[in-house]
Image 1 (tube, rainbow, N blue to C red):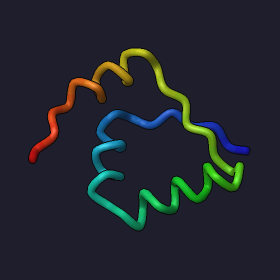
Image 2: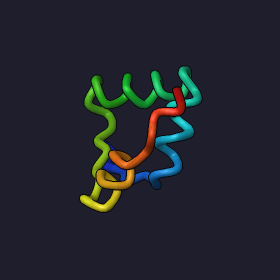
Image 3: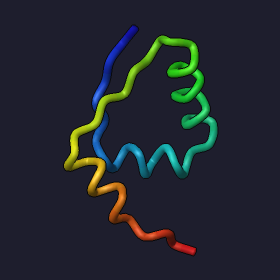
Image 4: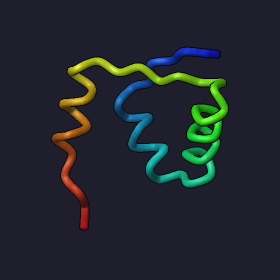
Length: 52
């Protein structure tokens, strides 16, 4: 299993890229990838407003 910490901006990019997002989610479900975050990243993501 590969463990990775991605930048907050990458989360935004994955949101805008359904095939890329599905590839990441598929790797997580298959046990090939584990994403780790910090409390700072989680707070940054929580503070993002929905553009709708």
